[in-house]
Image 1: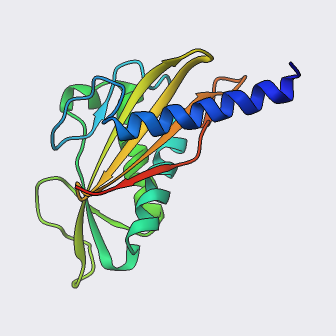
Image 2 (image 1 turned 90 degrees about the horizontal axis):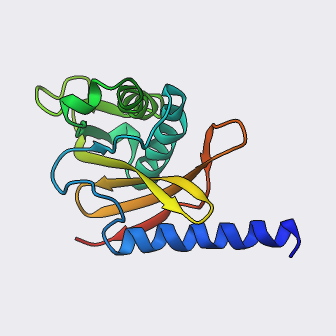
Length: 174
């Protein structure tokens, strides 16, 4: 089989895997609950924050207006935020949402800085490693207001950078 055919097959398998993980509630051990979660080992370096944060911001912006929304970002547990790579991802998600134009409030505290007529939206994200036949991938799941969920699969390129491996998969409903 030619390398081009193998690449097409690998991409199709990645898309199918991301869709299966989203529709079955996920393939990883992330706890259910109101907090975000970054599985140990899912991120390797602070540079992982940029692609993960950008994916979260693009999804949220595709669903709600930055000009009329205040986001309550549900952070990972304190123990996870103490790990450098996980802390970078948490900060990267917040930064990307703000660069997209969203007002982001802390989980607890006054929602200062948002538009006066803002609609409040809650955002939760889960980042987990996912072993596949073509190597370990990173699965990002984003939940908006506990009603809309999206998943995106990432892979490592030849330099070790995190890059998109499959398109965004969205599931609506409760």
